[in-house]
Length: 74
Length: 230
Image (tube, rainbow over all chains, first blue to last red; front, top):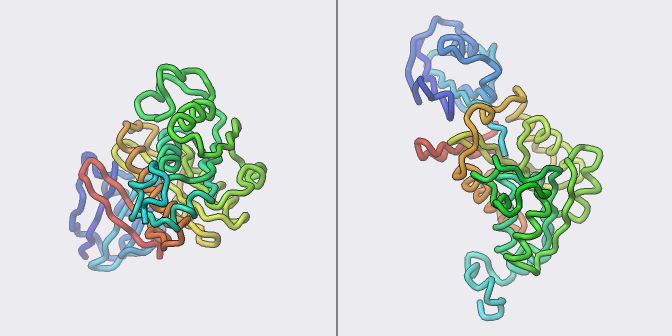
């Protein structure tokens, strides 16, 4: 199945902004993170099709996964 | 109509009406943190004509603050940040009433610190304290404008009592990427200005644009993208 992966802020560095990627069916959000060597602690927000999702969320063909790092400074 | 305004506020008109200017004059805004975000916010609120500012910070000005913090100058090195704020803000607008608190915010002192405030602005540099701040604001019935910065990046939004937007957005991890990306001057100034815009809208009774949503700011790619909190 195909998943549209969108990365934001520092997660883009050395990676990409957006990419359509093939994943096995029943892949989860954590599988996307693992593929791009994104440790879960470096991902603060995860949206699937614009909705808040946890790392175990099972993806469907055509889903868009958006990942954001924690931005804490002031 | 603008001629009823003091000259110092005439250039606010008519983006800010005479009635709105009066609302700002009656408003009290608390800013938690007087660093990069907080310093620029305080300056803008003072120039806009906000009547009272409550500034909270338990830190002193250090040399490493000079790259970005408005109250940090070679002259203020070593003094309390809230004292540096007083010097600057009195020079900018002596009519702004200041309540300066040389201390760190926590859930136990929130009610005391925020007494009389109409709105709170988050300018903290800690994710966990930002979450605590939201809970405190909500328990006191106060709206919160929150923002975080790191390197070229930032995010901000508005949380009204019961929204718990910060808790939802910042629930993973304490260690923000600013620890490795640093904070160059431009990012806090941009995010501070955007925060001030939202705060002013709330004070004058306009609808805040970033309630139940957040603005993701990427200055490296010059992208500003809004996401809904669903």
